[in-house]
Each structure stands twice: as C-alpha cells, then as structure tokens.
Length: 453
Image 1 (cartoon, rainbow, N blue to C red):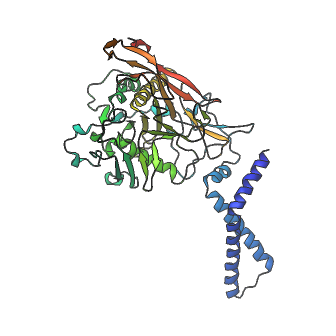
Image 2 (cartoon, rainbow, N blue to C red):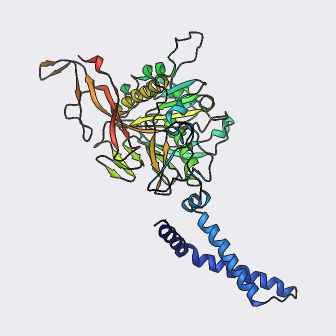
Image 3 (cartoon, one colour):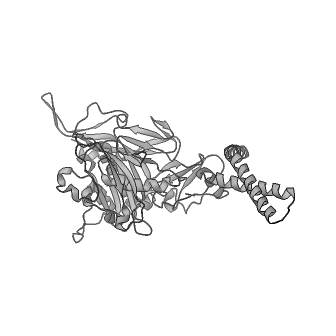
C-alpha cells in the first residue's frame, strides 16, 4: 500500500516537472557538446545521452525539492519520532503523530528556523525566567499627542489603515513590511473597540505566572497600554497581546512578522489559527473571522481550513504561542496572542490562558497543545495553540421592562448570538477543543462557580 502511494507521488511529480527537467537535461548536453566541439574534442553519442539523462534527473530533483511537500518527504526519509522520557506531549521536543501502522517522520521545518515555542507546548512556552508583560488596547481619548506616536495607531472616522513597519530603525533584525488594520473607529462597537471585558481576567493571568508575593521594588507594570509600548520594549520581554489586530496595534505588527517567517518560504508546519486575511500588500487584520487550520474535525464546522465568523461563533477565541519575532535574546523570548471574535471570547481566552499557566505550574506533567496537519497529510504536529469558547456567563442585576432580574450565571449558545445577551455578561466557564485524538471533543478548562448570584 505504501509503495502504491509512493508511486502516485512520483507520478504526480513527473507530470508536473518531467517536461521541464527533460528540456533542461537536453540543454545541458547540447551546451557541453558545443564547448567540446569548439575545443576539438569528440565524444561518443552515448556520452551525450548519459549527460542529458543525468541533467534531467538532477533538474527533476531540484524542481521537486523546490516544493515544501517533497522536501519534507525526502529529507525526513527513514527518520522516526523520538519521545523524551515518559512525556506524552511536545514539552520534550517537537511532537508528531502519524496515521496508520507506519511511524511518523521526524520534524523538519525546512527553509526557516525552528520556532521552539510554537512547535512545542504551553509548558515549555510559559516556563521562562524573563519578565512577562500584557499589551492591551488604548482608548484614543488617552492619547493627546497622536502625532508623536512612532506608528499610526488611531485613525478617527476611518475604517482601514495601512502601516509600514520598520523594525530596523530600532536595531531589530526584521525586514520592513506593511500590513493593514480594519478599524471600528467612528462607530460605537462595544464588541470590538476597547471592550473592557477583554481585560478583567488579566490579574488572574498575572497571579498564575507569578504566584509569589508581589515585590514592590519592581516598578515595571505587568499591563501596558499599546501606546506606551515600542519595539525595543517588546524585544526584551515575554509578551501577551490581548485583542485582535483591529483593536490592538501590536497584534497586527507582531503577528505579521511571525506570519512572514512561516510563509517565506512556506513552512511544512502551518500556523494553527489567526485573524490575518491576505491582501496585495500584506496582511489585513480584524477580529470578525477567525481562521482555523487544526487537524481533525471541528464540531459544527467540519474538516480542513475554515473561517469562524463572529455571527455564528461569537464566543470563540484563539490562544497561540510562538517565539517573539522581535526578540534579541537567544533563545528568543516568548509571545502569546489572545484574541476572540468578540469581546466575550477574548475575555474568556485570557481566563483560559491563566488556567493553563496555573495548571502547568501546580500539576507536574500537565501540558496543553493542539495538532495541526503538516504538508504530509499523514503527519500531524503538536503546537502551542488552543481554540477556546465561552459556554457560561455571569450577568449583573438588570431592569427589563420595569422588572428587576437578579444576578445570575447561565449557559449561552456557542453556535449563534445569545438571544438574551447582556452588556454585563462576563465569562464564567471556558472550554477548549481537544483534537489530540479522534474525534475532537470540547473539554472544560475553567469554571468560576463561586460567583453565582
């Protein structure tokens, strides 16, 4: 069976590159013949036939290995997955899973450096001795001199801006790039524009990362508004970016650098989820459609790459960890993107990340990761990414049609907007998608049952 698959792969590559390879081989033979003739050297016909055949074979290999799929298959030939000790996850190194009776191939992220944080699990990612900071959106009303900002973060009355980002100005070895932000400026949009519910669980995240008593001699804050942040600060810290690229400038600025590392040349292991949408000049960032590329089936959405629209999946969010692309340290600092399709999802994802950090710290051997499909459809990789959703909320006392309604906790739908939506609703229970086995299932991650009204 495996030989039949190999034959089909070879046949497909031959159809794609065979003619170009043959032309290249003949051209090489003809060129050599011309030079030898000019030098008065005569060779037999079989020499030129062999030369043309060899040139065709070498050209075929070069053309085929120009595609990540074939580089992955050839350069990992015969290599097996190595499991470190008794660990069942990727904390001891990149973790791959193969389908069928044959062992999975060892990891090869060809054409780029290994992302030691992304191609691992949250245990390795969150255990770092250097300081962590959380970058949150700023309100335009907090900025009296927007012309002094290094980059254009606000655009009153506009719905889209284009940014040319030059990290090299600050001595950071990242090429200049552009990206766009789809803004909600000019309209009142509580779901996407500086929603305070994004931020309410950041103290929980701080305590999960730093359980020891607060050292008042450390003057640096944990929470930084986006307009108080610059590339050199990000380059020397582990960073949590809260909110999508429409509300948080640094989500788009940092993620675009991460995306380009994976896209040029194409990585054999893709990014699991993101809010980036391609444009002619780069990426466009919003928080209205979450692109998901997890292995297996997403309940309610099917298999393969899909976009989770906020109108259907209003409580969904992503947590994605990777190397900080601005970092000047070796190994690099860490970076975690936390963003939801709406504010409720973002707040729930912050709570979920706090729960992940606390569980990892207090429960030895515990780790979290998701599987993504590599360029070989039979090989999946464990990565530092979680798809989350809020399933229960707490709402304050309300007055509806003249009647008071008590504070309560209640379950909410996850496949459509909440018909009883309240502006006071805050996340109380969060699930994550566990796709490490078939079928994929939603598992409870954290539940705040102590706050019932």
